[in-house]
Length: 247
Image 1: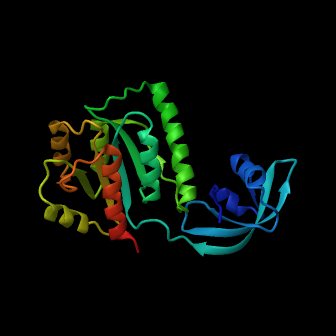
Image 2: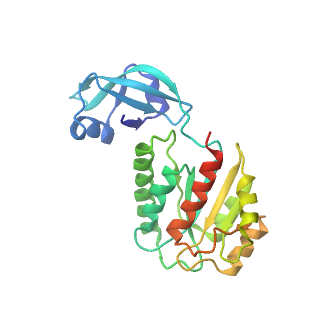
C-alpha cells in the first residue's frame, strides 16, 4: 500500500487534503481512483488508513477520508546517527538510501582529512537537498514512520562536538580490538539510547581522527578480518544494531 507524509496541520482537516508532488504522484503517476486506500503519517506515533474521497481538479488536491487509525511500530527504539566520511561519486546517495531502509535517524556527511570530494557552499546546499529527497523516497518505500534528516555537511570537529551529546559512539577501524570486544559493545546498545556511528571515507581515518573519537569516549570496534568499502561498513553496523534492537 502506498504511503505519504503530511504535516500535523493537515490531519486536523476533514477531509485531509494533499497537493503538490504527492497529488501529482497519486493522480497522474499511480492513477488511483476514488475508493482506493493509502496510508498517511505525520511522523508521529500513529498512521492513518485513508480512502480517496475525490479529486479537486481546480485546486489540484486529492481529498482523503480517514478509515482507521493505526499504531506506528516501524521505527527502531533508539536514535542512530550515521556520521559518514564524504565518499566519491554518487556513493552518498546509495549510503543514504540503504541507511534509511535500515532504520537510521539521521545521516551526517562529514569532511574528513582523507576525503577526496571538495564542496563549496553552493554545491553543498544542492547536494543536501538532493540527499534529503533520496531519504524521503527511501522512507516511503520502506514504510518508515519518520523521514530521517540528512544534515548539512560538517567538519570533523563539528561532527565530534555534535556526537558528544550521544549515549554511545562507535567507530569501525582496522586496528581495533578483536571480535569479542565488538560483540560486547554492540550488545550493550539498548532501547532509548542515542548512538553515533563514524565511518571513514575511501582512504579511511587519519590516526588523529580516531584519537578525537576516543577523546569523547567513542568505542573502536572491528567488523572482522576483511577490509570493507566505505559504503559497506556503515550498513554492516546498522544491520547489527537493527537486529539487536528490533522488537
